[in-house]
Picture 1: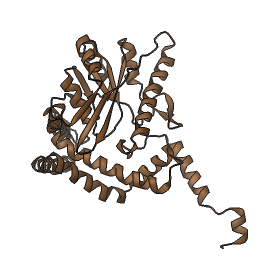
Picture 2: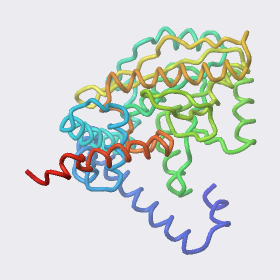
Picture 3: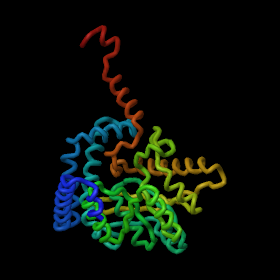
Picture 4: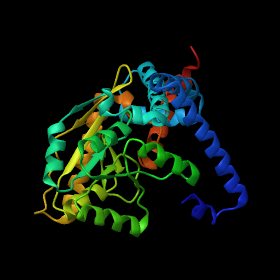
Length: 326
């Protein structure tokens, strides 16, 4: 509860949180007032206009250079601006997600038979996805399919805003769960023991995870989804979301990833983590504008190598230094 959280912070911090929450509530109210399409268009326009002017735009450009080193620079810049629009649309759409469900006719579901088979089996699976397009639509599809599932997420730092986020998701039936520490892990395990599936995002930086390959570069990825699947003898069920024209989406349940429990456990975990990472990379390559490029996905050493390469490219060659400017 927000009240419990604020007992451990200063009055000044609590006041800041409350002001932020009031502004967030005003934004939510405005988006709900103007409606789904207008909200999506407004959010896209705002971030397309402001995003490239922020310091985060440098992170976006660095990420795109790592992922697509051979892409024409002008095309990379256009992609960077377009992804800001997508991010803005997604943020604004969150306020009206109860109007963006399979019942609304705005979500095409591919592989619905797989979801029905999971529901009918009564056995839990581990859903995984990357931050593609509006990932909330994946949660909406899972809820509509009747699969009992805990959708995990990272709680907002502001507890009052976090309460509003939970409320917004609850409008379309999603039960959010933010696991923290050992207690959170135990709750996930207890849920799966009851036959509840779990949905996890697996494309964020995770410094303690096994090192795998993502866009031909090393990354660390969270082993949690793979460990859960191994523990419960189940499969990893990859999901993807693609944004379509007209505030519409396609959510796909892909071929499950089966883990090999006959080999060394650590080898099996690493193989599972790599399989998930490879799946996400394939989805990003298919629709790069849909991915959440604003976070630092790779280790610091990859960015350092990129910066060193850029500095070397900017330095004049020895011949240029001897001959001077043309």
